[in-house]
Image (cartoon, rainbow, N blue to C red; front, side, top):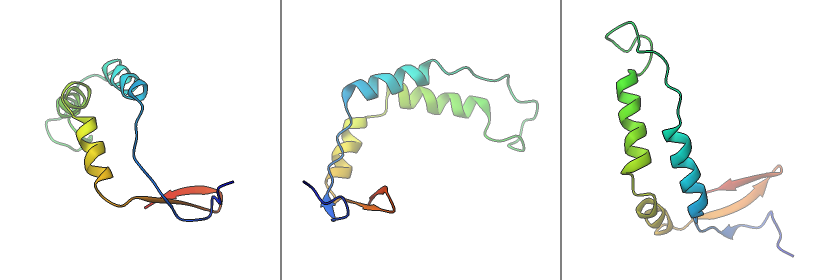
Length: 86
């Protein structure tokens, strides 16, 4: 039995099914109407967020980032019933 409060090595390993679901959800986003101002006083411009969403869904290399994260020492422990990754 593993002591959850012990500091243990952690390896980032995102299931392909989760990435497929994430892409599906990004592509299924219901966008609001275009903002009524030309500045960012109402938040990030719709076009900017849509471009970012397209990038994340179609171009972002999740596996490359996963490999980069795993190139560092990662650990996990439990504190107050919460998993803490560091």
